[in-house]
Image 1 (cartoon, rainbow, N blue to C red):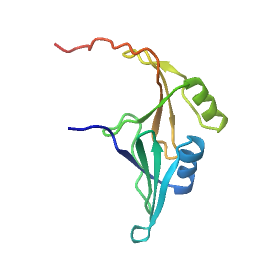
Image 2 (cartoon, helix red, strand yellow; image 1 turned 90 degrees about the vertical axis):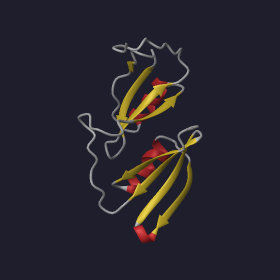
Image 3 (cartoon, helix red, strand yellow; image 1 turned 45 degrees about the horizontal axis):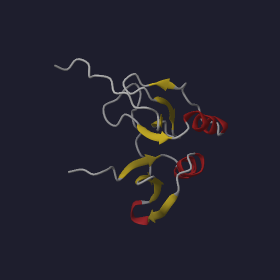
Length: 139
């Protein structure tokens, strides 16, 4: 029924700052940018492989509760081919990045950082040997 994720929508508090973060720092190409006067809202479509991020601005959006673990979308994860290089790139841009850890279920390395609105983002090492651990607690 579902073939793929088409897009993820993000509402930001400072459009220019978030557009710079996602396009310049993360390097996501801008597909199109539209101003919708009737909503006083910008929309920027960014390419992430075959998927897109829709970056929106709205006047005075309420803050999203994200920590501690809140109900709802937990984080957005990006696959990278060279995790240590991606971490260095973010750190050189002044972005705080958590230490690299290994996923105990898959054996793949990952880390977390945040966007300008503190949305949790993950970098996940692509290309490592995938080791699937047996599910725990299921009978």
